[in-house]
Length: 259
Length: 246
Image 1 (tube, rainbow over the protein chains, first blue to last red):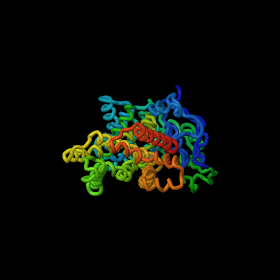
Image 2 (image 1 turned 45 degrees about the horizontal axis):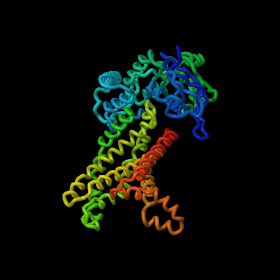
Image 3 (image 1 turned 45 degrees about the vertical axis):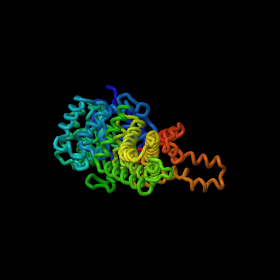
Image 4 (image 1 turned 90 degrees about the vertical axis):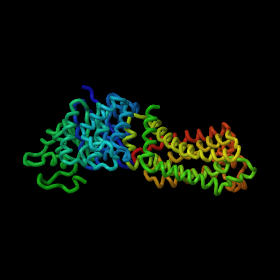
């Protein structure tokens, strides 16, 4: 199976700062890739480059066979993207917003209306369709962002913290949705929540200081923890990998690991 | 083209979803009326003719403050809200985004200008004006609004702060006005060669609007405004491309 997302040697400088430093990975259809890392590790920057928002300092991104730099419109057409913070036009209603996104995505007429009805049902927006987005709660805003990302049934779905700001029930629903969609799409999602990786991802990548430190199945990640660690084994491995210093012991939390 | 239209429609609907559109139109109409009748000697233009020269004469100054108020949000607001990331990852080209947003603002400014039609009716009731001249004046005013808007859009693309966008746009627009303002020209003509002064003055909106507002539709004035708009929008796209994220 050919990779839907091919990332090769991606580098991004912000002035003297090297935010992303030689990241490479492939994501195939049917994969749900969890993108993990401390804040400022380069997760969002990598996603912004993969979706064509930021221009890489070096490296290439191909999505569904299209180079994001040389053929951005075709690549972007294949992607559904939920940016960090789920931005949307605050004075629009979710219905008007989804119609706008749908028209740009090439949907029209009854096809557009049925796609909107479908995503509204899937992320449960029925009650707020005609309220301005600025009046919605954080959870609803996030779901409006999800709805616009999956509206055109994209082959590739890239989501920056899709469950941030949702309550436990909503988190569960969104995770179920991602698992379902993951069978037919290539999905990349970033998260801080390690249980989320276990719950929905078929693969995990940990990055810190712009470099990939781990790339494998969630079970493999967990199995790196020594046997005496019985609880939160993934957390332990995550901290060990990203704090950069050897841990004194499984019970003590190193300071600064999440900074 | 279709995508440009979709963006244009969304933008235009955005003006009317908030009080921005209504406030702008009301203030524009009030001020243009006030300037024309109170300050502009509408009833006595010096040669006893019915015309709208008093009305059009104030437009450069009116636009100086009102057009930057319209253009300041174009890109600064997208940056502030983070929606620029959404817009720039949709399958559209930069040109479509820039053009769609600019055209929406220009059409809106055109609509506000068109709503001054009672002025045109008034002058036709009171006398027998040359309606061709008035039409040329409206064309000139519309083109000048487009020029100011394109400059403002370009400035708005550089910042996420709308106040900064407004202040810088007003200053830039002022520069494009003053270069043709008589006191300014006489200041320079004292010590600069005439060709340099003429070159500076040729960049002024005054110079190019003046002919149109008196009914002279000349190719060089149309070319000036249209090429200025094209150039400013091109710069707008380059600025966005260079600094999309910050």
